[in-house]
Image (cartoon, rainbow, N blue to C red; front, side, top):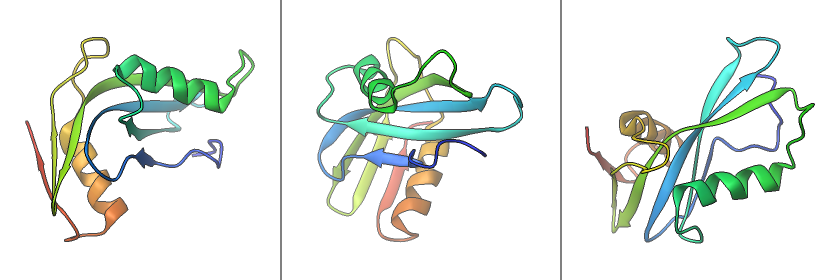
Length: 119
């Protein structure tokens, strides 16, 4: 995807319990050109605060080449060598926790954490 290079696929806290969201980034000129990123932090009390912080950091303008859409939320909890993924956002609804699990395993490396998620 020809998205902005400064947007990491995963940007989350690496300890504790916090809310997270999935954001779909779509190229306005080619709707097939899209990807899903994961953002989460304990700094934000609500899922929509995570998205607001993301958009402010990106400084998105109406002429931006991409559409940024929150597609769901949940919670992530680090507990020793385990990561628990569950819940949903009251604003954005549930997200695909299995996709989040797969992305986290790729990000951290296979076997570093046991990743458990709610289906």
